[in-house]
Image (cartoon, rainbow, N blue to C red):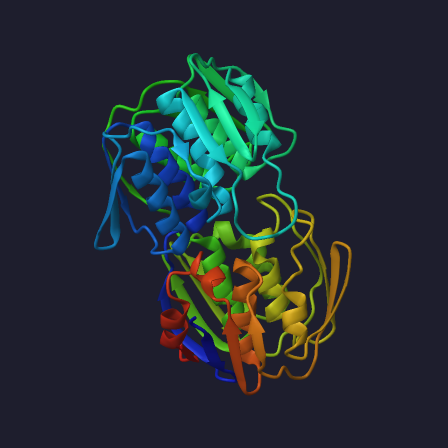
Length: 416
C-alpha cells in the first residue's frame, strides 16, 4: 500500500498547468455511449475514477483506450445495459450511466452506487426525473431496474439543484421525444462542459450555467473531439497549499471566474491574487489571518469540495474561522486527522470552528475521503517534521499526480 510522505516547512514557488476536471469528465464518459461512434477526449485526467468509468464502458461493450493524454471511446458495439455491483461500488458518480444507458438502449439495470462516505446522498431526484420522462423503475435487492420504450420530453422541476440529477436528466432527455425543460437545474461549470460535449455530438442543449436547461431529444450524429475543462478544485488545492506554506504560484489553464469564491477567501486571508486569460497568480507570506464565516453552497457559492482544503490552509491563521457545511452531513471526517497534527478545531453538527495555532506537527494520518486527503497534503506542507499520509487511494480518485505537481513547486514530498 502506497503512502505520501511530506517534510513540511518549505516555501513553494513555480508554475503548474491544471489537469482536466474529474467532475466534468465522469458524466462526459457516460455521455459517450449516446452516440454509436467514436469520441476523443483531450486532456482527460489519469485518475482511478476515470479508470473505473473505463471499466464500465468496456463491460457495456465499448472500446476505450488511451492515446497519450487523450482517451478514445468507441461506443458503436455497445450491447449491454447492465452495470454489475462491483463496478457501481467503485464511485458515486457511476449512477450517471443510468440516464445514458436508458437513452441509448431503452432499458437499464444498475446497483446503487458507492464512493466517498459523506453522509446520505439519495438518488431520489435522479429517479424522479427519469420517471417524469416516462421511464418505469423498480428497486429490488439493491438494484435499480428501468425500462423506457418511449420517453417523452416535458418540464421537470428539481426540488434542489443537484448536480448529479441534472446530469442524469440531461442524458436521459437526449433519448426522449420532444423538448425537456429542466427547472432549478444545477449551475456548476461542469454542467456547461457537459452541454458543450453533447452539442459537439449533434445534440441540441442550451441554458447550462443558468437554472433552466432545455434539451431537444435527438440521436447524436457526430463523432466528436472534446477538450475537458480544467479542474477548479485541483486548482483550489494548489492555491491553498501555497497560501498556507508561503511563496508564489502561477496556475495555467484555469478559469479565474470558476474560482472566484475560493480566491476571494484566500485574498481575505492575506494573499495577493491576480489573474489573466487562463491563469491565476497567488503570492503569500505564509501566515494567514482568519476570515470570519465560510458557508458552502451550490455554485456560484463556495464549493463544498473546497471546504476541507481551505480549512487546512487556515489552521495556523491568526484568529478563528467558522465553517458551515450546507451540502453534506458528514463532511468533517478529516477534522480528527488534522487535530492529530495539532490543529484546534471544534465541531457541532454542521459547524466547525477553526482557531489558528502557532505551529502544526507532522504525524501519521489517513485519508477519510478525496478532499479530506487533499486537506492533509495542504496541512502537511506547513507542518514541522514529517507527515505520513495513508489510504491515498482516495486522493488518486481526483488528483492525477499531486506528488509530481507539488515537487515541481519545491515541496519535499515523495510516494512510498
